[in-house]
Image (cartoon, rainbow, N blue to C red; front, side, top):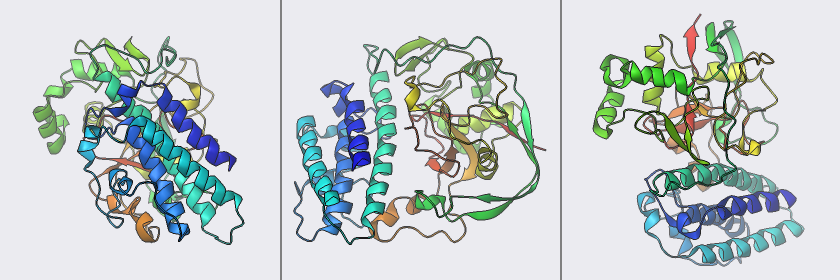
Length: 410
């Protein structure tokens, strides 16, 4: 009950930094309005906990089933994702009332004697789902404010420290052999992280840190966006059609970038972010390297625990450089800062089984045409990521905090 209260309250706190007008805008198809996140995470508990576990339950508003259903086709029709920003109603105030009513009902359910063995697991899934939307709330709010001509900030205190130098780029050797990957049967994990399985990895080299803004700017100035042989065919087509010539949120002169703390001078030592898989792959080709597979990334990350890094708990809400003198760990910036693109399609593990019922749509049906990203970002909730955690995006996505770690064949 305490965890439920804490997670739900944190979502409201994150939203409260925005003006009401900020919470209804949808600047692009990928970024949902803040108020939709507030409503959808509440609908999740209403639909999959209260409605599914209590025969006598009556919905707060039957119309919310359509408005706040994200992609559960087995539940019923849904409001089109690109048009979420067109919904002036329900109001933000009405959605907060909805949250309060559902919270009261869920807490009453948790306080009552229960012989339902699945209830705790459903609540935990709902809370992890809400933590995902806390991260999305911030990434989406960044795009809302970035699109605003008044150059406003989410929080003036969201300022990552500037670097004084860049850690030398080294590559750590990882020997060939079988490795165990995926989540075991203890503790919470999403269904796409299981089952744990063995996988053979050839020897490889993994970069000790992330690619920096300065290095990526050098790639741009060297003609990276005008050299087709560096690019995958689909990436080159998108680059031309969308006129990409720099990462999202960078100024045209390559000197500034928009952050949740407002516009800042570009820090050449900080990790580059808001790049697509196509841009990451093109940079790796230009650098004479490649991106790591997700198996290579997880194999190295399993030895780099506990999970510590620039996650949302730092308050910086932006990727940060590491001190030029840091040598405490072999691999730096594995956790937080940016989601790291992997050269692996998002596919099921051997003997994967989705959750039963509508919740089976949570992950499994997206295992096509998307690519894996690992490690969390600067707006990921602390305690939410682990070495087996799999995020996934379309290769053209840039609105999320997505960055680059390089790898090589040994």
